[in-house]
Image 1 (spheres, rainbow, N blue to C red):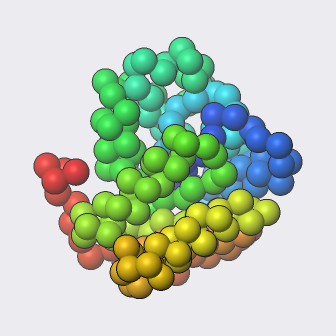
Image 2 (cartoon, rainbow, N blue to C red):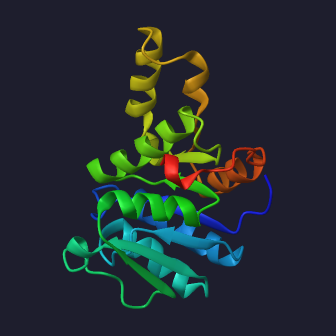
Amino acid sequence: MSELRSVCVYCGSAVGRTQAHARSARALGAALAARDIRLVYGGGRIGMMGILADAVLAGGGRVTGVIPEHLESAERAHPDLDEMIVVDSMHTRKRRMFELSDGFVILPGGLGTLDEAFEMITWKQLGLHDKPIVLANIEAYWQPLLDLVRAAAAEGYVRAAHTHLFEMADTVDGILAALRAAPAPQVTPAPERL
């Protein structure tokens, strides 16, 4: 891939029960900071989002948060970021995060994380972008999702080629390797089509 300057990471506003998920968020944050890769994320200070952002900041890295005004207090907007962009809606948030990022990592999370992940995967399926997408399959968290996509393909609802719109990695090193191994994007995103 061409130079990776910024990565959008989607993750939960809760911590979850598996300590390995939080450890991976910390490790990913430290790795992004060490490689001078800007983190773009949802702007919250709580849950996996807060753990990730704090790790980047602790490592001297750069962080941009993008948060809709109606979630600014609910997700407790992180006060220590390099840049906080407050937007008018969830859709504007996703679009702005997309515009600021060279690739995407999906850490464990809930329904909001699934929504964000599927929107980026769908945009890629539709040819609106070809940026790399990596699901962080920590402790096999995303295995049921992969099984569902494969089942949909087996039923004829998803083309076989579209089961490769994203990569899976089960370690932070694997996540970074998958991002680096991705071909340089060839699609020039057209904001008016998003």
